[in-house]
Image (cartoon, rainbow, N blue to C red; front, side, top):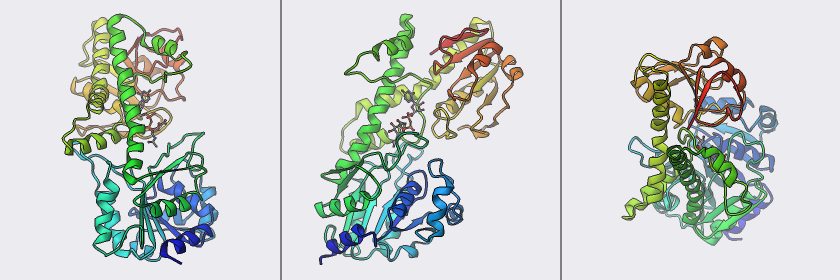
Length: 437
Ligand code: SAJ
């Protein structure tokens, strides 16, 4: 049997030992699905607190309850480690580490490079390496192949490499790892075949494509599509405002078109670790090829300008009450980057807070999911408990994140002025004057 046939056999009869590097919102669900499929799984994370928590059967990921993790750990099917030496015998490695942008908005591949360097040191013939972390087109081949060649491996013969983008949406009640189709692009057809054999144990629908670069571009198209259309929705809001038209009514009516339209909505900007970040991986790569990805650039400019637009709205609304921003009590309601989560990464609410702080507003925020935060300018704030008195103290209240838990009628009845960046007050009537984006 060839090395590929031996690996395929171990994958098909579940005797392979599989590993995941990076046990976050992508890696831990993957480790659990592989273990439930019957594989012996080793999860590796540099954060020993995560390792210890998993080995106690305690989950820290919203989509994986501990009751699902415990039996896998107790049976020995799944264990966690921080030591790459524990991966010496594994057959497969799925890399699910962060790929953020650095301070000058360029890809930071350091987490991937560290993982690949560590894997290369323990790599053996027959190993499969899959990169899942979102990256620029060509990243999987640029980073993995030279490190394997250095160890005299031949990809597609005695070692296998693929890219398979993660499509995890934390907290999504409908779509999770198993029922979200998984794109897979191997360096060679043999690489694709063994990667499909591994992932079909954990995912119902596999979508093989012709190369890692193709798979990388699939992911970048998915999220660039969102960033560009959100940018368009934001510019529509600005244009409708100048025309005296309600953009929300326009979008709602356009959505009645049963084909050829998909609604996106204006907001205070675009947060999260995907949409503001992933498109810039593509535009960065294109710059190295002397091409300017104009849609991505424009969408990024549009979306990052929205916090300033929100503060202009607040300033104008206070001005109508003959109040300057300086010294006015401004209550910011909701700071997470989207509703019903606690993640503030790249959240536009942080920019709104920073801009208001720079204008010397008397600033308070409330977010039941976010106890405290630190602004880019180093200022730290703590969430003020919600109360009618808090609302009544506001010269202006800004809704930046539309958590489902808020009682918007109560907010409306206890506030004098609301800037609603999420159109969540809707048609409700109450005491406050409501200003929309
Ligand atoms: N946003 C708008 N207007 C919109 C949609 C979103 O302003 O019409 C804002 C949100 O408030 C948020 C940001 O954009 O600040 C991103 O929102 P998102 O709905 O795209 O949520 P994310 O960042 O969690 O995106 C993830 C992505 N998932 C993966 O990359 C695996 C994205 O591809 C998913 O489409 C998205 O979840 C989802 O649909 O939940």
